[in-house]
Image (tube, rainbow, N blue to C red; front, side, top):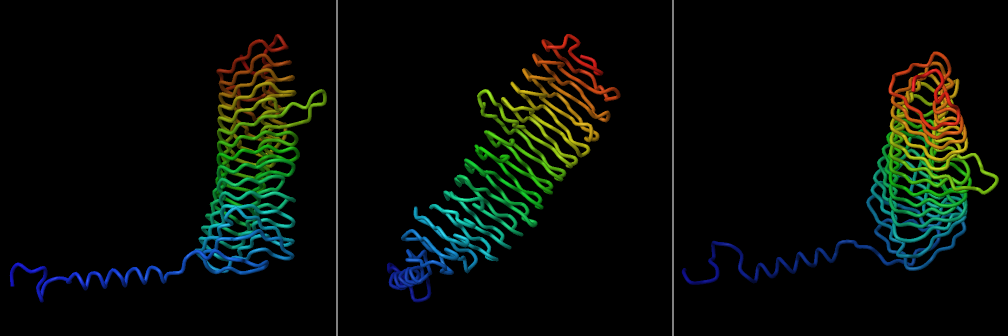
Amino acid sequence: MTGGTSSASGGMTRAMKRAAAALAIALLLALPGAANAAVSCGATITQDTVLDADLDCDGNGIVIGADGITLDLAGHSVSADGSSILNQGHDDVTIENGSVVVDTVGIRLQGVTGNLIRNVSLSGLQNGIEMYDSDANRIVANRLSGVWLRLQNGSDDNVIRANTVLAYEGLIWLVGSSGNRVTANVISNSQETGVVLAQATHTLVSRNDVTAINGGGVSLFESHDNEVASNVVHARPNGANPIDVFGIRVTGSHANLLRRNRFFDTTTAIDVASGWGNELRRNEALNGLQDGFLVEAAAVGTTLLRNYAQNFGDDGIDARSVSTRLGHNTANGNGALGIRAVPGVTDLGGNSATGNGDPAQCLNVAC
């Protein structure tokens, strides 16, 4: 047959196509979608859920009960005496778009992978976001006020990015974990250190902006093979009674690289208290109360290359450990010496110092 729209042996008729399209639409409509839900306190959710009201709960608030779901707070608030939002063991979950008031724990993740927490505002007491034994999760673009974010117990390969952390006890804390990335966060706190690594390894702390009113910028305690790079640490002036604020402090920690960080108005920019094989490279420190870069006697094998210290109250660089190596550092306009080193340090050459209070400019290295 010629001239027709179809043949008995070839292709689908228009009617068949219309029927197939209608069936496809019906199947699509039958798929589960996000429920705009009147969720009650302590409820376990097992599908995509959009919260339709605030919750103020005794016990837990909302419990995640399935993999791969999204909890959209839709601008609402969850508060609870227990965990405001609890996920134990469910992967690929998203929690977003609202606020959490922290009485005990705000959001707790335990034994999970692939979760995303974003655009959530948390405030209250201490335990804002806690993660235990959880890997490859993302905590992105949240606001924490007066509460901390803590990863611990082998929580590895997570990303903490572009969060704002504010006020008393506002800090990011990584304990006993490895391979995490803490990047591009803004931290302003009045009591604690901005980023704390305790028994953490292979962690990148990069491009964070920290205003430290007390405490300091970044602390490494018994933490090895980490990189702290391109961060900025400011110390807010405290009038006639300045408080001790460090930029980075290294204690009992080995083989860490501290590079291209900038420090303004800290008491000491970088203090290597103890540990071995740490390297300070291309850091810049301006306007401090004591030493710019301090290597204490208990530190072993610390290397300082191409660092810059200016306008510190004492020395620009103070190397008190005989195993320190110094090369191509610059220290200008400091209150005492530009570079003070104990006898026996290794002078790699290229160090320079001008305009410092002590006319000798450098001690036990050539400048």
